[in-house]
Amino acid sequence: MICKHFGTCGSCGLYEKSYAQQLEYKQEKASALLAPFYSGSPEVFDSPDSHYRARAEFRIWHEGERCDYAMGNIEKNGAVTIEECPKVIEPIQKRMWRLLERINASSGVLKNRLFAVEFLATTTDECLITMLYHRKLDEAWREEARILEQELGARILGRSRKQKMVLSEEFVTEELQIDGKPFRYVQYESGFTQPNPAVNVKMIEWAIRQAKKVGQGDFLESYCGLGNFTLPLSHYFERVLATEISKRSIQAALQNCALNHIENITFARLASEEMTEALQGKREFNRLQGIDLKSYDFSTVLVDPPRAGLDEGTIALISGIEHIIYISCNPETLARDLETLTQTHEVIEAAIYDQFPHTDHVESGVFLKKK
Ligand SMILES: C[S@@+](CC[C@H](N)C(=O)[O-])C[C@H]1O[C@@H](n2cnc3c(N)ncnc32)[C@H](O)[C@@H]1O
Image (cartoon, rainbow, N blue to C red; front, side, top):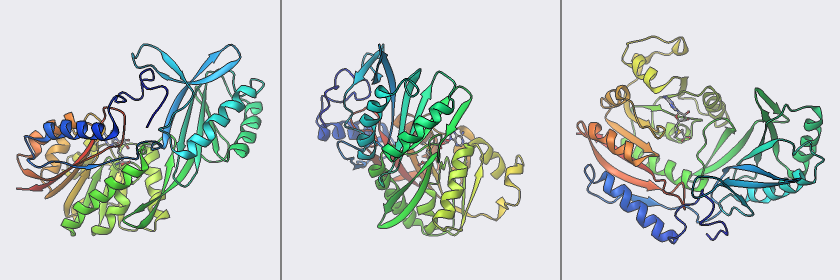
């Protein structure tokens, strides 16, 4: 990928290396952190080099009457206005510049005190655009935004302090081909979504490969989000219990389960720490009413925590389960958690997925089996 803002825009830091060199660098970094626990070389899953991000957020820079998109600068002490962003997928690319033209041409209703624009798009060409303002939105804004929705073939949502104006829908529906089968996912703007759909598919297929090695028993998942892994992996287990802290994500997960006609999953809104307390019988939750936790026989657990990694209770809980699939967006906390997990388990497979090309971020996965 070539971008005229390499070296000034802070969102791509690895621009001096070719894409092949970036992958090599990430593989070395992940291998070094995993070396105490895994002697093999992690399998590497690459990304398209450009047009890979289905989620992007831009600040709006006002200069006189004009607005521009802006990103934090590379020195992290200011902003840089941008004229291109080749990392966004085509459904964003084709709408974002037209949107800017319309904002600049508007009388002010769309422009005044607009401070950021977020895009959430799908490979099926749906796009949700969230416009964030430092002013209360009114009917005049709604009317202009409605026209914009038609012109851009997109869904528009307005946000300001304590206000959310939804014009049509506040979600998009992605369709991913996973091992040749279609899975449909409703994605809300306020819930977590994997940013790179092409790499996400590779990541799910890698997890399926591990699940197939088990091929029996029940499946436990924590940090399940909107059911990204849960739905495809559910086919390889008897019953599934999947938990997640975000109300919005659990709502999406339930919708996604129905959308894909899957009937063996129970979703519950629980923090990972709460799930541990519930499964260890230490605490009861109204949110688990009607679910017989004792009836599950978990052969496999999948965890995909935020950057902070796992809490002690969750580590203790999953240490009792035969197979662990650990997806991580932070190799440092993964390595920390493996210190404990490898006392009971051994790492059988490891992989890195390049969710974030041209940045330092490394997403990785390990499959562990009880010793
Ligand atoms: C890295 S995302 C992964 C989501 C999902 N596995 C996916 O692939 O889309 C982490 C998820 O953990 C959730 N989360 C954050 N803290 C949590 C906690 N303490 N307990 C349970 N879920 C939590 C977030 O809401 C988010 O959905």
